[in-house]
Length: 122
Image (cartoon, rainbow, N blue to C red):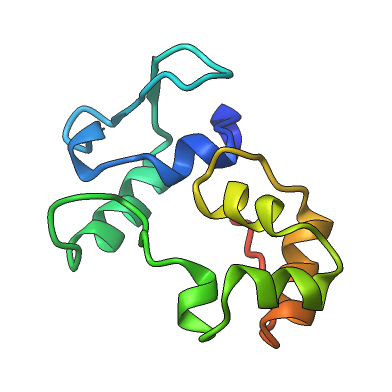
């Protein structure tokens, strides 16, 4: 979704019903920061989304399971590890706050002990 400039909060709210892969389009619902809009997908995006959605149950396009739940941490514990406020972690989990890449890396690597990998295909 990089080509279209979709915000993090918008991605978190995408549902499978917003995809029309036959026409190569995706509907982005409105948020507090943006208006609703429909984008034309590039052929490689259609291909990747088709593969990705083949195994999904109807509902949200991305998992709604909270990161802190997977790591068996409370928001407070994660916030303390990262030296941030608990309310900030809550905003991220609710997708009501956009996250900088450096912050995402800090959450994943420092807070959760994971590894952030980003792949870009051109």
